Each structure stands twice: as C-alpha cells, then as structure tokens.
Length: 81
Image 1 (cartoon, rainbow, N blue to C red):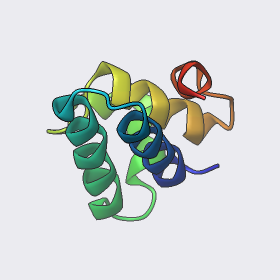
Image 2: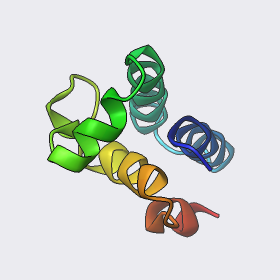
Image 3: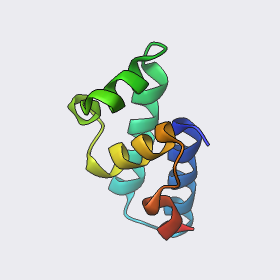
C-alpha cells in the first residue's frame, strides 16, 4: 500500500467510526500534500526525517506516510482496522 492509499484508508476508517471532523480533515489534508509533491520528494523527506516540516503533515499523518514508504504495516492503521 502506498502513502496515498494508506492515508485514504485512514480517512475512510475515521469517517466510518465517526471520529472528530478535525482528525478526518487532517488526514485528508495530508493526502493532498502528498499528492502535490514532485516525484521522489516524499521518499527523500522520509529518509531525511523532514516529512513533518511540510505544512499539513503532523506526527500521526507522518507516521502513516513513513510506514507506507518503508513498506511496513502502519500501527495507526492497524488500530483503526
């Protein structure tokens, strides 16, 4: 699962669980940020540890993205599932 798929899945699960709107919006915004990045920048930022320096990417969203980029299961997503 790539980063956008992971973020979209989190949005779906949060929405389904009737999570606070701000949380859903945060993950939606993070997906928009990821989609707008030029090719390769996401991977570079994850490797450099600078992902959360992007506006709209916080610790929770950044963790989900980093897990997806690294090809490992997301604990955040697993908890929601």
